Amino acid sequence: MGMTITEKILCRHTGLDELHPGMLINAKVDIALGNDVTAPLAIEEFRKAGGKKVFDEDKVVLIPDHFTPNKDINSAAQCKIMRDFAREQEITHYYEVGEVGVEHALLPEKGIVLPGDLVIGADSHTCTYGALGAFATGVGSTDLAAAMLTGEAWFKVPETIKFVLSGSLNPWVSGKDLILYIIGQIGVDGALYRAMEFTGETVASLTMADRFTIANMAIEAGGKNGIFAPDDITEAYVQPRAKRPYTVYASDADASYAQVMEIDVGRIEPQVAFPHLPSNTRGISEVGHVPIDQVVIGSCTNGRIEDLRTAAAVLKGRRADPRVRLIVIPATQEVYRAAMKEGLFDIFLDAHAAVSTPTCGPCLGGHMGILAAGERAVATTNRNFVGRMGHPRSEVYLSNPAVAAASAVLGRIAGPDELT
Amino acid sequence: MKFQGKVWKFGDNIDTDAIIPARYLNTFDPQALAAHCMEDADPDFPRKVRPGDIIVAGENFGCGSSREHAPIAIKAAGISCVIAKSFARIFYRNAFNMGLPIFESPELYDRIAEGRSVTVDGDSGVILMEGAEASPLSIEPIPPFMQELIADGGLMQHLARKSRG
Image (cartoon, rainbow over all chains, first blue to last red; front, side, top):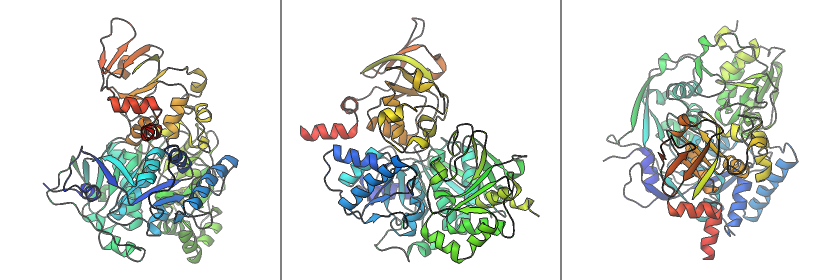
């Protein structure tokens, strides 16, 4: 019996010859990740268990990105716990403000995660790295603490749902729209406990940015991981960044799947997820008149340079509606510098956008753009739960960067085709 | 391990932002988190909940973020256990790792009214609803190793105790 790419990666990290869905396994991890919200708890747990030294200072990655630059005294204290620990443990991959970026954009960019890796992260969007052909999944702080101590984690081998994408993308349709469409089809628990494997002829035309966005939101369908088999596009991204060997896996032709879904992407228009679930999607043509107060372009979902280029293409020569606060947050310093060099900041500033240093910030209602009661935002982020970006009576609409930019200009949710 | 308490009902897809909004994640002090537990789903919940009470919910409870602050907040608010139709996978792991007992029951949610009392027997795998007319519901019992882990207060305390012998 053949194995899926997810099963192969898990298998390779256990020492077993084969495995199958439902098995409980103990696996070695290549990377264990924490951030300023989750790592302090993990560090406390690590010490409680008598931990003195992490299993490998190159493989424990600590990223202060959520409430940084420190938004208040409590968050400063949390960052300090992590910083002190990183120094004490001589953690290789700890990045301070000024060098740090949003974790799931930063780790691939720095070549810290590579194809074939097994990654756990105390952050639900850790599944992003599946875009590289890695098995990556979110866990809690205690699982992270145990992995920091032992270099291992336990898993239940997931069943896989295969998504076969065919056809060509319509104008202004991106990875964000594909994943929102899929979540709209299967629901926020449609892939609960399962792997989501993305295949089909369309994949060859998806950029790495598109793939990161798609894998990133696997968790919004309840998925354990999202994954793409590496191809030439992956290799072109990974090769200049990799500082260690890596292994490329692909699913066997006779691998078994819990479910196969065929999706003709040619039928998909830009998608908008209405409050308060990512599955509450509509095509842009069915949105109706929805006035907005704020637009956020950024996050681990859509804060990469390709996303900023798309937003800039829409915003060039235009201004945000005076009633709209437009906030642009490059996900990493590399993205920030590229956007600056390419002249995108001029376009954003001319459009009256506030351009921020990298941070998760408003995506999780942390800082840098919190909403008041009754306010509405269009965001390129990943969640629109009640209170996600601020007051429990505020609303978040999820979209791609082109729709977000066009909405900023028109002061209501709109696609770029509506701009004159 | 047995639990008896008053039921608080929540619907499907109760996410971790509803359980503990991210704006309060600048601390991991359990009592500080408990003061805002379920606040975005029911603003009065932190004041109304009493030690031993039980949360009963629909599908996909705990979806969203990986924050362990969610089961910590629920546990510190005094909730003795959570019974849902299904749980999101990260929350499922986190709850046990934090020593918060949780049970999957596809039936309970549709058969119990808020404010009623239930008795949960995690050893034999049975839920008894208040009132003699209702027949017991069966649930997956909590195996002995997991009961030990819960009694110790969570995974790390459990490991620490075991390493001390």
